[in-house]
Image 1 (spheres, rainbow, N blue to C red):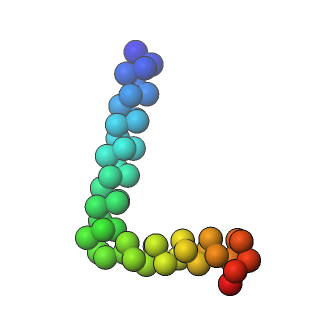
Image 2 (tube, rainbow, N blue to C red):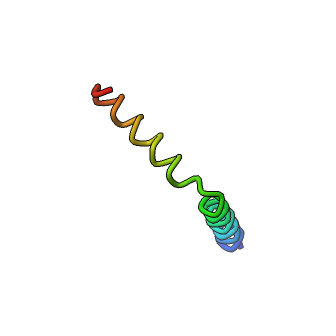
Image 3 (tube, rainbow, N blue to C red):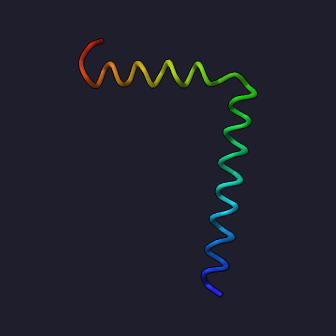
Length: 48
């Protein structure tokens, strides 16, 4: 019984994550997030 409850929560969290990803993509936030990730990486290795 416990594993069914755990599986249900895992599925719900996965569906919510996919929904948030789709919302972000439809709002055009992919380039914004990518640019921020590049800046953070460059700052971490000290190039910027």
